[in-house]
Image 1 (cartoon, rainbow, N blue to C red):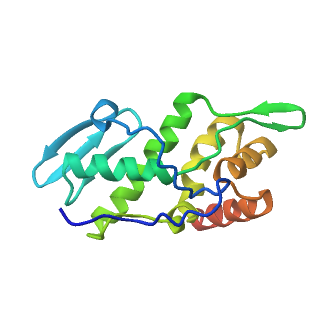
Image 2: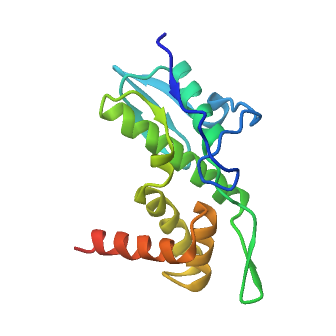
Length: 173
């Protein structure tokens, strides 16, 4: 197997992209139903359903776990107007699974080498993953929704709000 690219240059522990080699290895076969489907690999559970190109079970497991070591979402609760807001454990799991499988899918469907890089975690797609969940839970563009979204992605509120505005404009054109 060829060597995998994972940059260990991960910056600050408060960054969305931070290498944490001590994160426990996840047994993906316990999280997902993983089955070959023709020349592809189907990975699914209640949160995701992906058909990957050029991927084996073993390689999916390796990539998924390397993404976990770098993805540094801040799931701690935040206070907004004297009320605490946070995601349930099931919502946290949904986000992690959705984000990681979506990035692995992006690389494999485009026949690219799977890489874990900061640019993925700062890409506007990350806001898309967060928005669908927070819009349902706290309402569209409410202060709680926007503040929690910024917090989760470790962005300042102003930049996050601008990204949300841009994403909404992009999808409503």
